[in-house]
Image 1 (tube, rainbow, N blue to C red):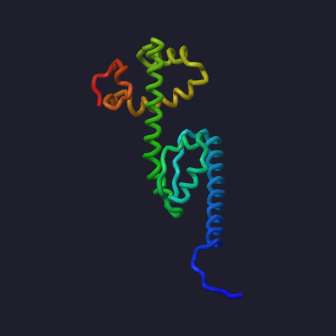
Image 2: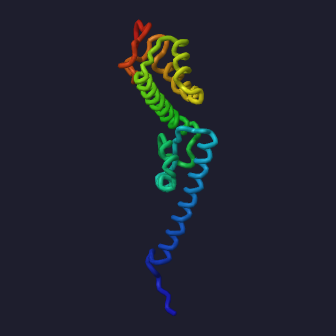
Image 3: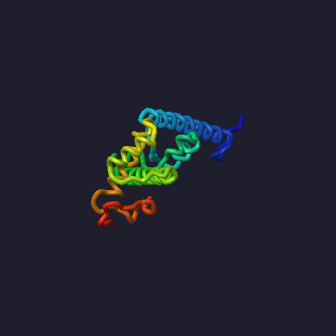
Length: 179
């Protein structure tokens, strides 16, 4: 039998590459399952993914649509990255996602209020109107939307009317000055 030095490649190289690709696919499937379990357990609405390009491409292919819709942001990170660096990357992504979710929910709520002919001013009147119109099962979800909206946009003193997505519907009751 005659042995020769062979170029890299050939059937052995292809088989090895398929083996590596299968490991990556299996790993991505396990990670996606773990992320899905965590999202379900924690009732998470937003997911931020971090990793290298190779891993991220496998995760994207393995991710079911329902989970992919919750992905709010993706950024590149090395496995040895410092936790503080991750927090610094994730914090603005999550803040923007919360603002966006709150704004779209407020816009939907205002649209529903307009269609239903409701319009009240004041904390107590608003609470009573919402309780009368919304089924009890939605109270917690609406509270999650309205509290951040009141904290960041429609603040008691100097509300941020210039960035309010529902300004056109607002009567600006009691607003003497705004930003």
